[in-house]
View: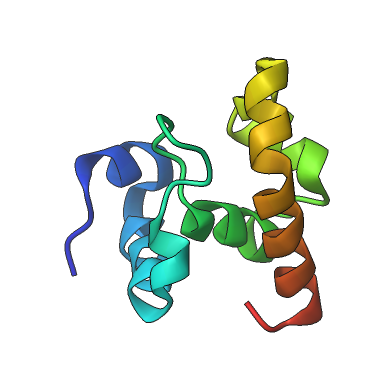
Amino acid sequence: MRAPRRLVRRYGTEAPAVRALAERDPRLAAPVLPGHPVTGAELLWAVRHEGALDEADLLDRRTRIGLVPEDRAEALDAVRGLVGEALAGTG
């Protein structure tokens, strides 16, 4: 399975696995914030496979979305939902 170049640059050989998450659940294919390429699948991957602990970890360290306060506020609910699902094992 091929993956977009952006995912390959970020995830290397794991890029097809990240892409597969989005293919299994279309909600995860959408960007978590309009104008940013980061998808729900990438956040879920970070929680499940990279040890991301909470929304601050995802927004500030891994995606940098949180560096712009307005973007952080807009993405926060989506990120909290994904983290909750991932930790509950339902996402």
